[in-house]
Image 1: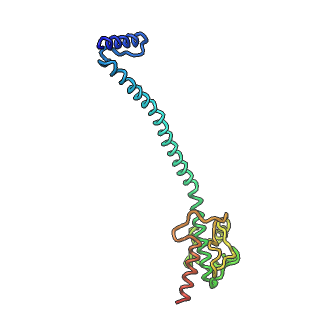
Image 2: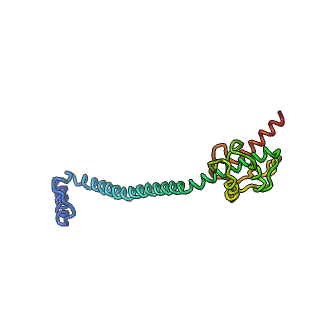
Image 3: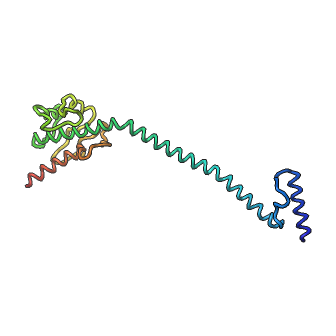
Length: 201
């Protein structure tokens, strides 16, 4: 049996040497041909696993790069949108301020138009109220320009509170960004709530 194993082992080595598929020497082989035949498939499996790891690593690298590119695009988009959203947030705040001041001055009657609303600025100074979108706080030209940034529903009923959101963007959608405590619809409803509470007291 040992002679047969030796002959088989030598035959294998001779075959490998002739085909030049390996540089293994005689002493590199196991003492048992059976051991060699068992160990070789394990080596092949290890080679297969190593080969499969490369595309997985490439996929992981591409996934990380793609995620970074998406993040970078979002940052750039936000930086581009920020100035416009900032101006829109000030416009929303100032419109809410004008509407609340009009309600105070007209016993909670809703204005009929922008021209009607802007009459609340007549004879007023920054000590009365301020428009944050302009430095001096009382710029009539700036106030006129608000109609180009904000949509007001002139059919709003302060008694029934309908519709719920009388002040929106020009496309009728809510403002994506507002200053804290300066969302115009909340300003209006807070004023009406305060007035209703004072009447009860």
